[in-house]
Length: 427
Ligand code: CMC
Image (cartoon, rainbow, N blue to C red):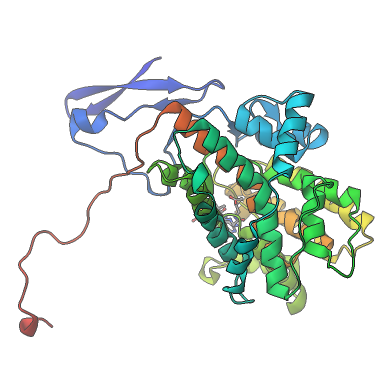
């Protein structure tokens, strides 16, 4: 089948079918309005494909996630975050020399301009780090006007490396500012995750010895967050980029989109939910009863997904990493035990079974971050560091494919034309 036929009264409209490399099909409606005057309406883009992309494949029914064809499980076990970043951005896994070169150039860009630090002084200590990260990421464009030309591949490449290198530094500075400690410069002898941990937790008076097991666990978490096709923040990056906004501006918009509790902000919301349940002394079952009562307006955070109607494969891997990290740190497992209890009850409860609601990537990740000592408000920042290569890869793919400005239409439901009543006669 290469065409779909839409019947409108007695008229047949033929619409082309597009088939992806994994066999999924879409009806191409780009010419529909031209042919019929009709648009399609799909609030929340539940059934709308916005692009064709060769970066990430998700089969939500079967719980499959692959970056550039490689299963997420294999990448988590055998790869590193920077190798995955290279894969997403360049399309292929690097050779050893390509990886060495990539790592080296990212390492060389980790420092921020000294004047950049002054931005932090302008933010209240209580500012949410996602707001600080979004603002300072946009501010990178004020420091690097030499890499803003979206049509120059060399400038785009430099911009990409600056973002990958500097985002952990930006993020760690946001944390240090919030607690009033001096900023720690990056240490380029360390790996990507280890360097971030050191910038977060070392002080000029006391070094922080990075536990390689913890650094590896963080690296795996970053891999698992690295891309997820057309999610809210990635779509935001594409939409903003489609106006030919530069990469720094587009990524800053992605950070803002990620902040919301229905998206990346859910990892913070999960830990707050678990702490609330613990503090109130209620059982997992009682909390789930509240969630199921629609009048309560409460959702089980870390559960459900627009695409996965089966286990989120990332949640499975994170649950395992969670147990390993807690064991390594000899941490109490209270919150993990509570999360597992809730998962267990929910997966057997008719409400969740009927709606195909499973734990998502955010359900267990916060427990790991908390055990490592990362403050709750920084959880979503970690998600942003992980998602950065995906955002960049999608922005670049869009530019390589050629694009039109993103500009959806609407069905207008407001007042029809009317006269202005003089102000004294209104009321
Ligand atoms: N708790 C309770 N009920 C839920 C939940 C939940 N977490 N998620 C969905 N439902 C119910 C929802 O009330 C609706 O029920 P009904 O059909 O009776 O009205 C049904 O399931 C379908 O939900 P929906 O809101 O139409 O689904 P969606 O695809 O628009 O939303 C979601 C997806 C992720 C926003 C949603 O599942 C949710 O709010 N989850 C909690 C927040 C969360 O964990 N977000 C992280 C998502 S994964 C990582 C990321 O994207 O950043």
